[in-house]
Amino acid sequence: MAPSRSRAPFLSLLTFSSLLPHSTWAFACNDIQAQGTHFNFKELGGPHMVHWKEEDLGHELMWKYNFTVDLCDSLKWHKGGNLATECHHGARVCGIRENIDLSTDNNSTITPIDIAGTYSTQTGRVIDAKFELLKDPKSNSDAGPEGVRAILNGGRFPFDSKKEGMNQRAIVEFVCDKERTGLEHAEKDESPREDDSKDGEKDGKENDGDKKEEKLSRREENSKCEDSDHSLRFCGYQEETEDKDKKVKTLRLEWRTKYACKDAPAVDGGSHWGFFGWFFIIFFLAIAAYLIFGSWLNYNRYGARGWDLLPHGDTIRDIPYIAKDFARKVVGTVQGSGSRGGYAAV
Ligand SMILES: *[C@@H]1O[C@H](CO)[C@@H](O)[C@H](O)[C@H]1NC(C)=O
Ligand SMILES: *[C@@H]1O[C@H](CO)[C@@H](O)[C@H](O)[C@H]1NC(C)=O
Ligand SMILES: *[C@@H]1O[C@H](CO)[C@@H](O)[C@H](O)[C@H]1NC(C)=O
Image (cartoon, rainbow, N blue to C red; front, side):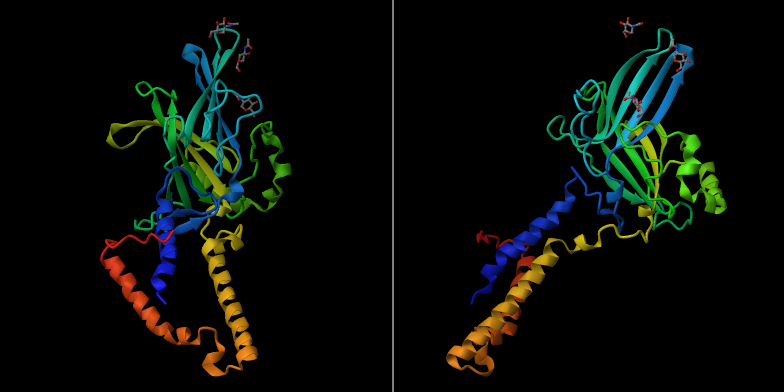
């Protein structure tokens, strides 16, 4: 009748799973948490691309960048890819830079830049993703849009150089926009760039839009993001100073999507049951089946009545005392901060 032994594995399972969220080598894009608010960005998964062009006409140089982001998974290499044209395995944000020498025949070289990801087997650097609400709930100012900011780390360029390399990171601001899924004019990896002149035809919502237009332009006034109607926009790739004068080259993106709204539509409501939900349902169903079947057996075989009907009827009558005993043990364990330890039941 000693219940503590049988419950020990369950308790240790709870303790173990409470440690899991602290790991920083990955995050689940379908349950992103910022200051207690949950976001589901599953629909934004897959590789998405933005472009940027930088010129130094004085030196007759031009750099063309393709930045690719996959929020939900590490980026896969293209067929026949190699490290000369692809980021290292584990990258979730990758920049491909094309250096064009305008003084020669536009002679160009390609340089991949690892911006964010988890490179546990190469450099041991991890993405260490941090999420914060755009509108700080603690600050009293009303300013700031609704949404969440993601800070993704782990990149370095050049990748292996401890001395000369510079850390890289990506800061993506997911801004609530109820009229956008976040995939408008999305450029999936490999697809040719959308022709902006066709936007009106492709965007069916264009017509209902004086209000939308107004909102959009007001936002653009105080943002440095590229002027485009794409849901995912490039906002900068500059050296920034992290704490302690540490320089970090930062890719800034803005992603307008309804999934960043507080009342975002549920993408997959069912899966929130998770392991423990199903565990408890099955657990109680099993107990119910056991009690019913056991009672039926006792009734038929032994002609039992009342308490005697139930299998282990005397044990069930003891349950309040067992529970009290168990609670006392749990409290004792917590107060003794596990000094007793030694549940070697597994
Ligand atoms: C080189 O590229 C520039 C800008 O893209 C273009 O104007 C110029 O014609 C190109 N020159 C050659 C020789 O291809
Ligand atoms: C292109 O650049 C490489 C070195 O960066 C040089 O060896 C090559 O001769 C150049 N090609 C042309 C056509 O200028
Ligand atoms: C960048 O993307 C464009 C459009 O998808 C593609 O044509 C170009 O080859 C890419 N550049 C590099 C260096 O991968």
